[in-house]
Image (tube, rainbow, N blue to C red; front, side, top):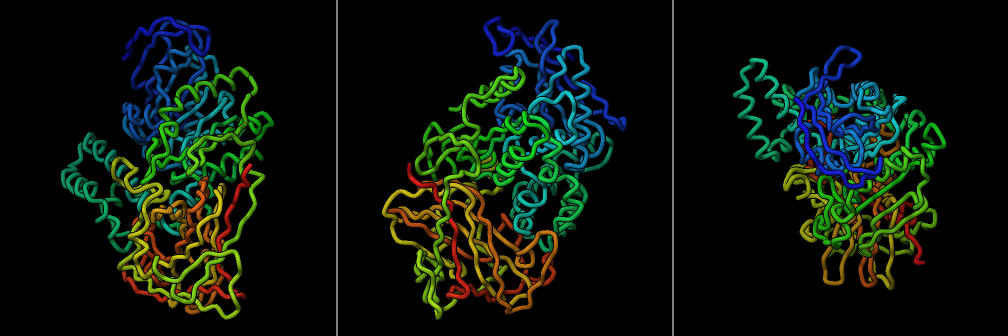
Length: 594
């Protein structure tokens, strides 16, 4: 089916004129194994050869919300500028044949689709890719195959691998995201089964109940007790079956294949996006290790204050001003300009990195990431042994603790976990942004199982830009447990706004690839990565660090047993040491004022 749209003849970005559009729906694209994938092809009307922009997604190519809003690129404007646009349902989704196995076929299927496009009568032999989240993964995985026709990619809010920072973080399952994402795959699977003649009424009713109240899904134990997901989204159980970063995960890890990627890339991320660390790792890894000098020099990075699915000016409880929104930036223009530069072989005239500094609420260009001029400022977590809650005696200070400083103790009860309150999470609600971002922490800080350490009011503005890390020496009465930490900005009016946070499973403190169990009561030292941020803490504000053992349902609760997937939940007594021999501290990447 083909439709023509007349859009006039004004000047465009390529070729000096704008073009009318012709759209063909569900065009068959054969893969090397004979599986047929289907794509919608948008192209300038009439004869001509055009570079093509490709988006491969599992979320329905006919959805303009996904293909346009989330991707940040309007297909019609691309056609008007002289590009063809191909939107393809990945294998096993919507109109495409085959079975959906997340990540498994995207490298080869992407390469096959690029080769197919290059042979079409509308193609000039040059293909670029774009899109967000999983659609960023389809780009990077295809790029690892080094397709000859691929020229550039724009991976937007996506990861560097699908274990750390995607399915797990710090060795802990990202339950809030992976269970919700799997329910979404189930919603696609049911119509396909119905079309094949299956009776799906009972599963459909159950799926509707779970989508309406996903918190009941998060509460279920053991973690693999999800009959509906087992039927409709079996990949969820593959992820649970591989709690360590083994060969299963390395088979699709972009971070181990940077040397195979030979194209420039514009990496787009958000400070509260669930995949921000992967976005930053991809930029730095490809800037250093891509296959060619052109590819290395062609890496670009753009990071806003955004969360996953929320690229606007208000994120969490903060309003960053109208200039913070992707609507103000015009992401279509930014991406088309990037593609035009690469295809024309023109050098970039601006620095490769552009970040939004929260607190200052302004954009700033940088020459590199990480920022070379940062210095590490270490603040120690200290108390007189009663740092429980915001009204405890925990403090943050530059001076190290004394030799006899007492430890802090709290009871972690997985039956009453610390609730997820903001952060780089992806939970359902108002699309995906209701629970994400910088959010008020005072309710959480009333709990006795949250240790709180607060600094003195800052004498001057202090910018923290880079990866924040908290190092602790801890002990638990359990054979295994989790540890969490969070950086908080305490405003002069008393608001306590979360900035960035992290988690670490104790057995994976030294390696995600091999568990190292700890006998109960044995002190061990570990470092929790809180992820990257860029925040200006204003004069008069206070820095604060929270320490606890849960962040639910963003992360699965640890039952405090050797079997981390067990259904029986057992309280554990947790100890945080902070004496001279076992100091606890946060390392902050501080950018000196210019």
